[in-house]
Amino acid sequence: MESLPLIDLRPLRDGSDPYAVADALDAACTDLGFFVVTGHGLDPDLRAATMEQARHFFALPFEEKMDIAIAKSTCHSGYVPPKTETLDPTVGADGKEAFDITTDRAADHPEVIAGTPLHGPAQWPASLMPGFKSVADEYAKACLDINAHLMRGLALALGLDADAFVPMFTDPLASLRMLHYPPVPVGDTALGIAPHTDYGSLTLLAQDDIGGLQVAARGGGWIDVVTPPDALIVNLGDMIARWTNHRYVSTRHRVLNPTHGHRYSLPYFVTPDYHAVIEAIPTCVEPGAEPIHPPIGAGEYLQSRFEATHAYLGAPTDGQIDKHTVLVSK
Image (cartoon, rainbow, N blue to C red; front, side, top):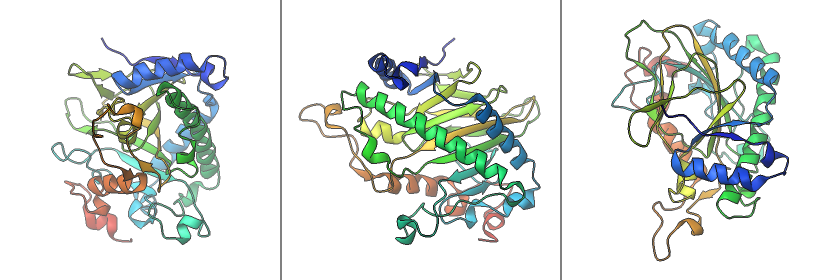
């Protein structure tokens, strides 16, 4: 049975042996683009507190969650009801519900003033404030620190200066996503999340012990992802694949709906700054060859993927909740 590579980040974080970690990252990223990390520095108590806040949020009445529906947001922040996100049109809309918490940028932020898409104030559940926000903000800060270390490791793995990616992440399009998968009857073949690749650079995932995450294996079939306590799952998104001219891979994955309990998970998505240009690193392109993809702005690419998958932005849905319901108070 296949499993994901397990990488200890401590020698990278403390500087004792960063190249050993870079070699391990390189092997994992060229093979599957998914790996499990320990020694990442995320406080287990903070992780548990954030997971508990997710449970509190999803237990709120539907009407209260819809008060902060993502369709009301100017920056893709808010509640995503079941059956309103379609990651694979051949499978149908996803069964999970989500709460997307983007970076909270105030009205006086330069990019908000400029009207840059995906920049603006995050939406927060009124009945859970202020404790909810403080925990989510602390969790996001910790994840951005882990992302910075991982990007240094990837830079070293690619033969670049350790800080090569730093200019791309001065104000990243980062987002904490809380996910809830209600249990379904045994024998139900519906998917919580259909097979897909992630859109940004890195995803850091904390999951509970219910199970259900599967990663597409290189030789076919699916790998069931099981992790040690407090470990994080890391996967590469499409932008890393584009940066590396597909030397590193962005791999399809899916989540099966649980049958024996409620599943909760906390993916933290990191995408470079909106205006960062994603283009093939020259050392990843064979001499005389053309890059697989043309350059594209990070924000432009991310927005295009949201528009292709979210009902409130025009994507098709077979929803139990139709588009009018989601848009009614936009």
